[in-house]
Length: 584
Image 1: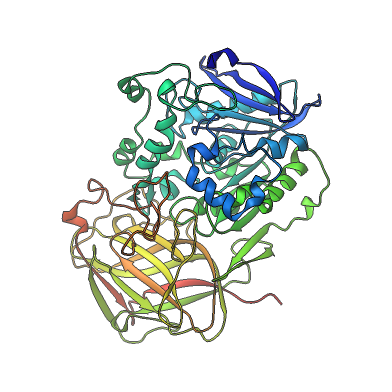
Image 2: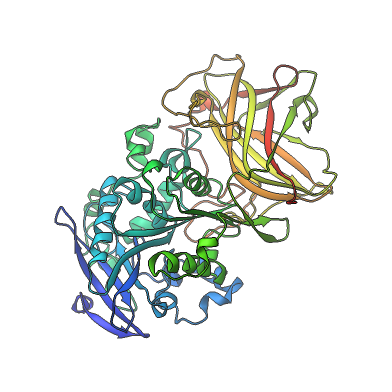
């Protein structure tokens, strides 16, 4: 019965819906797309997404926890739509089609209803997206202007296709919380392998792999099997996909495997709206800031917000921003977007966000301010420390936390952060985990609802000491850029100078509060379970699911070691903060 509806057009909920349209790739593989378009005949701008989460799996079925949390806090998301066609991390057609858009959702190769070998973010996928964009451009219902708009996976692959293949009809792109550099942002933080991706892959991708068939869900709207008409064995499914963890372990340095999956910013010329989340530590935030700064496009904008990873994509705030951008570039509507300031920030306070516009990133009026480490007193000082001291800690312990004195007045910290660290190790390597935290006058830590972590610190950074080599062309004082192209092992007990990149952040520190820096040789995690989500395997304790525990990447004989941090004198370890004065 399900397959009777293949390639069939129906009119429902004031839209024409084309189920499972075929799109033939250059190697003969036929991908499948659902198209939602206006009832009124004509040529319409297109919003296109390509990804592995199954175009026929409703949001509230596949991601029930997130759906209930999001719509409970923001009931506006459910207003004006049946919500039947809401899917994970893509637009709701019922809120776009009435505005004159055609929505194209493509199941990526090997996922959902599209056959083929499943290899996430591969060069093959990037070529597929190019072909899908060009296919959509010549359909009778298309005006030839294609925009890409989606969260996470549906945003990350925009970086690839826009720079690797530059589809002629890609007219605008909105990368909503999108990692970009597959080494630095995604798989290896500071050179250290992240645990996240194997669990994500099993739960969110393999679960809807093409060939799951009758063992999977049924699309309640089309009646089709979400993961294709055939049901393969477990062994057949395994042979038809790349196991995502294997290449990461096999490629410890930044080599062609990662470069083939990462953008060449000099070739990104499409109008760009890059949207980041202050709480995106460990996943997407870095990519959005790098993309905005380094993209060659003469028309580019940055927006930064807070709270959960997916929520503002669907709220009126996010959707109106997206629509203004797309209306301007895809429909030619003079809606004032040409006067939109380049940077729109939701400035984070301990209890609210306040919107502010800026002209650049990092902010030109930033006062780059050094907080010097005084290890003996566990303090962060506003001026250089004369006397040298040190602190030793076991790497796999809670490490050491250094605090400022209480802030005398309200102080804004907005921008990238860097840590200069003088460190020795008892073994031939060391993994540095640096966490920026906030404490109130009573000594209680102030935490934040972040992208996927309910009680997040302000910011985080990572570095494997043997990867300390810097790229002199890309490194700045506030953003060290490591080459990750060779291993420079340590001599036990010898002092080394390390530059740790801490991802961009924002917090307005109230008077009487303190900033803290926690240094460890393992993931920052608090005792107990601070909450979890249905798509996350491990409990979240401060770093979300972005932990680094693989014993093959972090053998105990090397990383279960002792760290010694030095400060003061000519070993002036410091934290470089972006202090923002008030606008005059």
